[in-house]
Every structure is written in C-alpha cells, then in structure tokens.
Image (cartoon, rainbow over all chains, first blue to last red; front, side, top):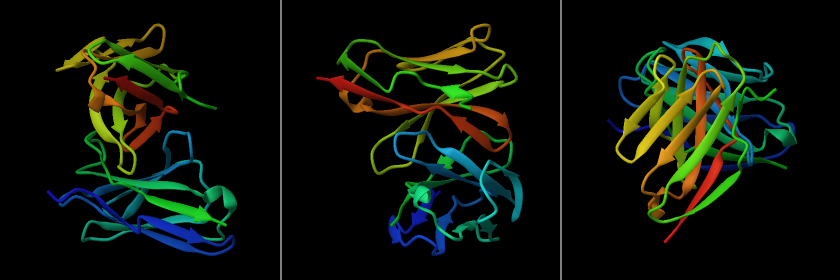
Length: 113
Length: 111
C-alpha cells in the first residue's frame, strides 16, 4: 500500500482561470471521492467516481468536474475560478463504493486571487 | 443547512484527563458514523466508527457513544495525551461514498 498522494500541495490561481488537481489513489482502490474544505469548516463532498464513472455528486456547480483513470489516479478540474473556491481540496479512496475505510490524501491548498 | 454539527470549536484538557467531543445530527436516517482526526498539513485519518445498531464502540483509549433518540454522538478519549492534540471531525454516511462532516473541534491536550 502506498497511500493517497495529491499534487500539487499548494497552488495560486487568478480568478477566471482553470485548475487541475491530481490524486493518486491507494493501489486496488477503485473508488475516489473529492472534498472541499474551506477555512474553519469540515470537508464538503464534491463528487465520487467509481470505476471511472461519476457515482454521486454534492451541491457543487458543473464547473467542478472530474476524471478517474484505470491506473487509480484521478483529477479534479475547476473552471472559471472564483475567489470562494479558495480552499483545501482533499481526495479520498476506498476499495469499493460501500466500504467505509476511506483513506485521505494530505490535500491541495488552492488560493484564488 | 448543516446536517452534522459540532458546536464546540475548541476544547482544552489536561494530560491524563478525559476529553469528550460532541456531535449532533439532524437526519434520523443516518445509520453510520465515523470520527476522523486531522493534524495540520495532513489529511484526515480514520479514528473510530459506530453503526446505528449499537450505542457504544470502543477501541483502546477511544470510545464513541451514540444516542439515537437525541441524534447525538460523542467521542471519549481516556486518558488524553499531548499527541491527541488535533482537529476532530465527526461524519455521517447518508449514502455509499458520501461523508457529511461536522465543522470540527480543535482539541488541545496540555502536558
């Protein structure tokens, strides 16, 4: 097991730009979820991917999108960045949709200026 | 609409004493709950869980209690250690793969 790794660790973007965040899931984990954690708040569910298909979505607009690849890596894409998108973005993987053993990465700190 | 609430942003206890972290939820359909611990610059790490068919689950120094009628759960840490100082999140699972987190409680354990 290699854990969950996220890149980059920190990122600064300008309002209106697009950003791609990356996550490498634990080997064998076919489910990945993305969360947004604003300062002083708990993580909020963005969406989940299971076997490369979106499998549930939280209350986030369509400019938040994702991809999951067969090699257990995934991406979170955010278009038309807004200042309120500044947050810590976490990915979490598990070996199936109903397993509760989620392993979180350390996150990407995104700052939109 | 906060479905999982941790009303105490912070808690400070002396080393060796008990730490009690509280969490309330609004949806009686939630049937599985987890506690996570988060250190700065790290992702949340799973601590302990409880199913709604139980009212208590224990793992070493950590015990989680669930009161379904009050829609309340609590995490007890006994004895507290300085290394327990972290942010603690409770979370509910409304559907597979989706966690609803509380706002977190920052625990400081003083030596």
